[in-house]
Length: 112
Length: 112
Image 1 (cartoon, helix red, strand yellow):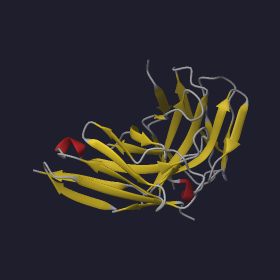
Image 2: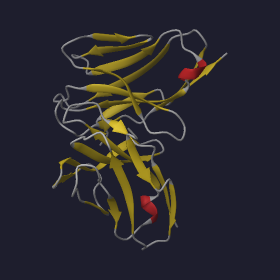
Image 3: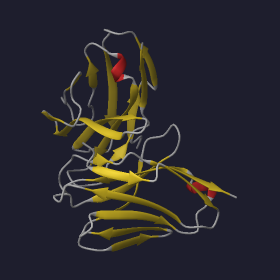
Image 4: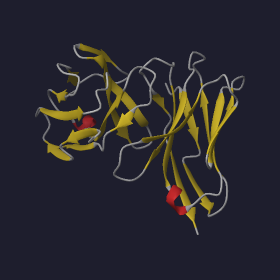
């Protein structure tokens, strides 16, 4: 199993550009989530999904969209990037609610 | 509003010593308290977790102590080794709820 994979590893965007951060897992996990990590602030939940077709907002959802069309994939979309979205983004998955979450290696995003 | 407060921000411990990281929470509905370990350039990895029906959980050199009345929990690393040097995050959630709330992290450095 590859576990949780994220692409790209690093991305530079200009303000106003859009992009999609990819996340995939091959463990047949129902639950997937996106976090952002900023210095001194820990990890904050952006969006999460409890299964294909079901998504919900986390603590900091503004500026981000998600969809879950398959069990394996959970992409995060930035519609119009802002410098405040410069961060490291982590995707995580779990077998089900309440089970341990496994994190991907992260995507480092710089918005100029 | 920070629901999980973590201290210290950084910690230096000699090899063989005990590393202690503390967390306090506000939301009395939290009933699942995991600790994550993160190495530079990697995603967080679940280290150990506890539920409030026990006051202590030990796995190898890692122990969680939990004080429900004080709404505090701590991670103890016995016989600390240079390989333990990493950033540690405490977190809290309602068990069965997907929304992990993280502390701000502690950078642990073990010196020879």
